[in-house]
Structures are given as structure tokens and as C-alpha cells.
Amino acid sequence: MAKAWRLRGIDLELCNCDPGCGCNFRGFPTSPEGNCEAVICNVIEEGSYGDLDLSGTKVAWALWWPGPIHEKGGVGHAFADCGSAEQLDALRAIWRGEAGHQLFEIFNSTFQEPTAVDRATIDLTLDGKSSHFSVSGMGEGAMEPLRNPVTGAENHVRIVKPDAFIWKDGDIAQSKRLTVDLPEMRFDLSGRHAVYAPFDWEVSA
Image (cartoon, helix red, strand yellow):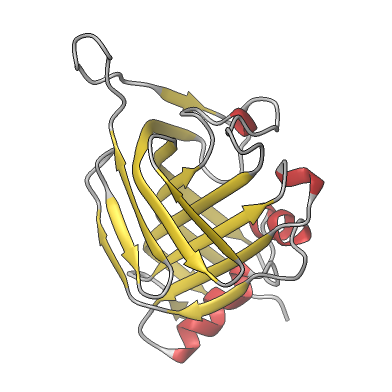
């Protein structure tokens, strides 16, 4: 029987598009490479899967597609920082799209096979648009504010997408660094798109 679940917290998203990410507007990447390379790191401040508490867990999801996401052919590899095997099983079911929600069902449908989900340590500092994280066995990501090239003043940019399924109101930043080194994908980027945003995902039984 399907379980009800809810996850709420902070989404850190970095990809190889120019800041703003064309996928948010027309569904096509604005990356020099012409494809999509990304990491989405979710800090779960409050969460549950049935009666199981998932609060305090974290998941970093390394993602790669050869072109636009909707043209498929991608790969995903998620890393969960959690305290028990039961929590890992719950997070694995969610991230593989086996427990519902558009984000996970749609993304997994664009992969060559459902995402891998492994356990790892995620060291993370939440500091708005200066947040950063590192994932054992995967890589790291750090963001920094956008700045006016003349004055150096911070450039405040938000994207609001009321009907979006990942985040609905995001502060736009840029990557200070984004590195992933896995057998199935490898990239090393800086000065690209980054988002700091709250998320609230829920599926009823």
C-alpha cells in the first residue's frame, strides 16, 4: 500500500546553465555545453514517510542529460545522509519515483534507468546564496551571490513559478564551484546557475 509522505526544507540547486537557467522558461538549457549537468541538494528540515521521521536527513542528487531534460537519455545518482537503514529505504523509494510526486516520477522517466540511491555523508552549510556542501564519494557545490560587474554590489534576482514542482520562489545565485566525479558522470564548473529556495513536497496515501 502506498504511504503518505511529506518533505519540507531548503533546496540548493546548481547546474551548467547561465544564471537563471533557460529550462525554467522554455524548457531548453542555456549551457555552453548544450546539455544539462546539475546537482540538487535538499536539506529536509521536516519530513515523514508514513510513520517514519525523516527530519534532519539530507539528499544530494547528481544529474546528467545529453541534451534538454525532456529529450531523455539521462542518468541520476542520489546520495542520502540519514541515520538508519529504514530512512535510507524510504528516501530511496521517494527519489526513485516509487512513492509518487511529479519531480521524482518525471525525472526518473527521463533516465536510462531509475536513479541509484546510496548512503553518504553530506557536509553542508546553509548561508542563503553563499551556501555550500560536499558529498563523500561524489563531489561538492558552492554558490555565491550575483554581483554588478561595475560596482560589485549584490544583484538581487528571484524567479517565481507558482505551478513549479521543485521550488516555487527561488533566489538566483551563481556557482562558485560545482564538481561531480562519478563513473557515470563527471563535470567541473563555476560561474553558472544556482538557486536557493524553500521546498514543500507532499503525497497523500
